[in-house]
Length: 402
Image 1: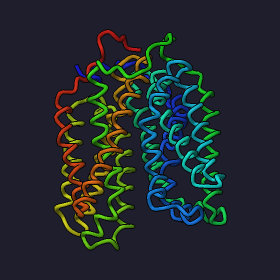
Image 2: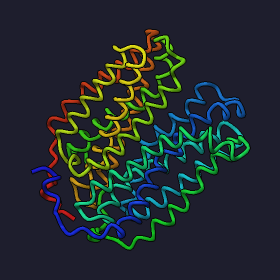
Image 3: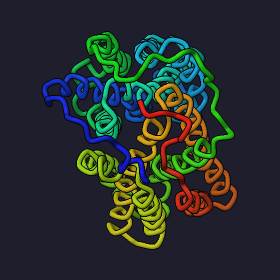
């Protein structure tokens, strides 16, 4: 029986009682991405002010992505010791210190240190959110809760990348330092508001293991499939400019990036509607992973706007796949194990999201053909796709439902 079929159909609380929790989950999701994705639009200004090389300018984005993998373990440890709510609040404070600190740094070294601290905070937030869902939401609302905070995450990608230069920076006299601080400080309000809901549907749990359970096949399988979605999105974002230049349509880069990122917003809105029906089902994962690969292949085979449309399509289905994968841990294991499984999934997934595009870039540099970077990501995705066909999405028998 699937997870969706196992969800108990109990009486739903009034929407007014769920709304404050939904708002908090959404804003926490927004801050999973805004601190990371305000860096690319501000990078030229930061680079000019601090005389950064191209490599260091790129590291403003790639270093936090690497920290998303490294920081999963501290997040899991904190969840096992102080609980998911306290971990999420602590992680948001760490994120603010690093993110706002970037606006105060005097030199390159402290900029990179602040970026790493910010990435650590975001990484600790990632497993804390799914671990918090069973405590704030009844079992039949967990899939919707996952879709809500992932909607915030994907909206944060678009907001951070899309409105920083045209709307936010002019409000602060075009200062990149003030802009970073202004984006960061409101997260402290969200962190404080996390203590307002008086909800705990999960039973008290004692301190347990926090390292990923590598004997559980789900840890590696979910992580590798999460990496499929991540390497497609981050990888194509990184190589979009080079690929369009090679195709002779570099002038279309602004439109291509706009539609590529707007497609993620569309994905999050679709999943708000489809979350209950699709989360916990194997077939949507198989279909969306396959469509992600097909869309990426289309980018290479098609020309002009058809190629850009294929990229936007891939971005949309990869975003939907991301939500499906992230929503699984709180449905498959008990609340005490959710942080542990989530942390292992993020560790594997974001390691792949960082290393596969990086490997593709090395191959492309060696061959002189940007398409080889994209083909590397396609090859990885084809290798891990069969894992989706054998996913066991039944709740662990030895772990009672919360």
